Image 1: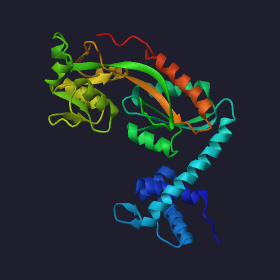
Image 2: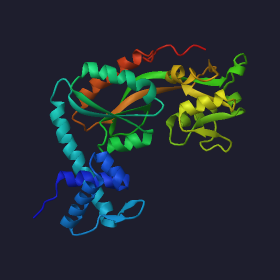
Image 3: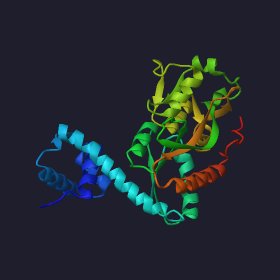
Image 4: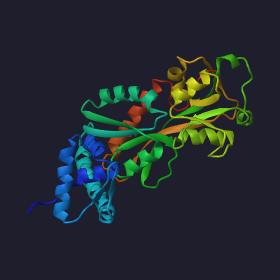
Length: 307
């Protein structure tokens, strides 16, 4: 009799997560027919269907919905056994899955990769860029080892380690370089360009301006780069984090200014599960990330970008 294997469970969880055979196969680094065969074999072992197969999407059956909860618990336990072995190694070695929010990843990640490669040459780094809630969900499910996000996240199951603080700065068209810098009230009267919903930076900017979370007259963009280019085209103004200034403003006709006090700012930190056996190693990773940020002038207490 064929028994259920960890491979069956991993492929099942991938399909449940992605809801699409080709995307799940890509995530598992196997062919779609191979994935389909494994799922069919698992359903034959169980004697019941786990998925409703549609032309564009695959949905869990009622049994599949119950099954996936238990499967994720099992896979999390298996991963923690692997982490337990890795936790006994010094220095850290093997796979390291770190999530990073989009308003940090393009600017900090290159330096982080270099520093981690130097300090932990045996680590196989697997970075993942996504919005905060998705990273926290994947961290909780065991699909990530740690995540670099804006703090606080206020989840009792997670350790929060601050890395650095940074201000938000105002980006305006070059033609407005000599004008007075508006305060939060002044920004509310301007055409403010912000990121799409789901980005924590968007929520922080709205909070500073004391605007509703779903303002009606708001132009949105999918990235800071898009927002800055729209500002350069004269569409409006935007706020960006300090670390993005050099990269995003070098190819756009814009001017950057510090906002009046009290200036908006955020704390960037790294979080991981309290239950992970890798806690001591992740604390070392946090220190390495902090050092990488320091090379960019982003250490705690560092001076913000000049006006």
